[in-house]
Every structure is written in C-alpha cells, then in structure tokens.
Image 1 (tube, rainbow, N blue to C red):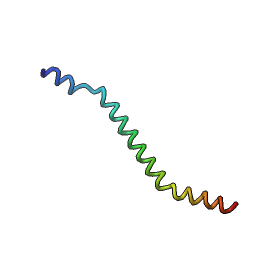
Image 2 (cartoon, rainbow, N blue to C red):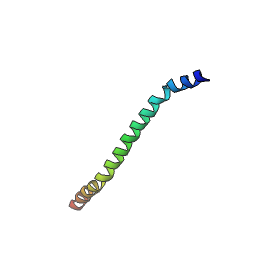
Image 3 (tube, helix red, strand yellow):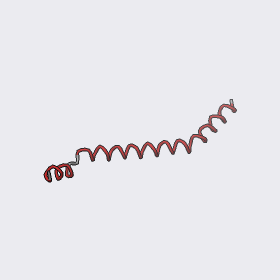
Image 4 (tube, rainbow, N blue to C red):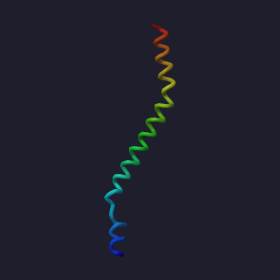
Amino acid sequence: MGHLLCALWAEEDGQTLVEYSLIVALISVTIITALGLVSGKIQAKYSDIRNAM
C-alpha cells in the first residue's frame, strides 16, 4: 500500500496539463478584461467615423 501511495505522489503526468490550463485561463481572462476596457473607445471611434460620413 505504501508503494502505491508513493508512486501516485511522484507521478507528474497530469501536472503539465494543469499548468498549461492555468496559463490559458490567465491569458483568456487578460484578453477579456483588455477588450472590456477598450471596447468603449472602439465604439466611439466607429461612431465618429459614421458621423463624419
């Protein structure tokens, strides 16, 4: 039983997947936040262009 627990504790196969998943999640949250902050400015520019026509 002790050998099984030691083997499970030392296994790192899923660790890389979890790390990459966390990196992708962090990048996604950053992009969504940035788009939320910039979207108002983009809409204002399109309104200016539309009004200038």
